[in-house]
Length: 425
Image (cartoon, rainbow, N blue to C red; front, side, top):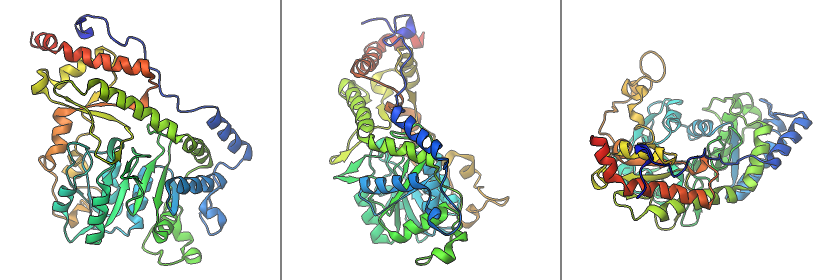
């Protein structure tokens, strides 16, 4: 066994890691084409053909809908905007409850607050890290309006079960599929099972346009409402209404032609982008799954995992070294990672203090929900004690570099007694 780098040995990976090459000549030419056209945004916030956006936006929406097999794709300027628009599209109102997981990016929980909705936190499964249907059931009340499932780290939630649960209870199922553009459950694409699915085109994702998002739905009315919310819809409702398009306020959530042009190129290459991340994650799992106290990500039967993140559950009692010390040793060997993910969202001040909008604490004045520690014990345990997370989307890792990642992990694990002794000294 070679000496750990943390203790003065030579690191497995000594050179800076190459970032993932997400942009190329095709994206560059697509941007140049838009700039030459002079139309950087084709939207008008008034009735007419331009209400739906410019040519690149419309082309992207048609291509996305075809690729994902849905009736409607509606672009927005971010997945966060898409989640907010989804809340408005389903008619969420003050005091309505939306059940969602606490172990996710904060935007998921902020979206209901924009309409006066009350986020209700359901715990996650400790195998897939997605929202636990049993916890969802336990949190349903007469005030529940929707379930907001997150396909976290690229693994689909239990979507079929959640959709049936929503249909049986008269609820909406919204999917936050920002991290899972090609995940699936029994052949059904994540993001297309719920009433509305939201994808991200943020810089950190599998495919991106800098910023951007896409909402998908098979419900024409929901699609119309999404479009109205995206683009100052109150200016156009009287002229364009195909049904009831009242009870909404429009914003400027519009995607630019530049972003749409880049996203079109990225969408054409989505299979390759996602496959490279999946291959890297599989190499890491195959190379380390035999290590005691080191549980590689699970894939539920019939599911495709896109591996936006590769998250290991670390058991300090079995390994015999604290997660923090093990992490320091991994970093010294050159393996990029971090421990935990995000603290459960109910620890944010907006929930702890029950104040979101205005001086008096709206919308929490409409609810007796409280947000103390212990609310979602699996999420807390994962974040505080178990999670070790690597981002396949961040690095250009060929087979040789993947082998070095595995070697770094195995080296620290094999030297754990030496590491533990040094840590106690």
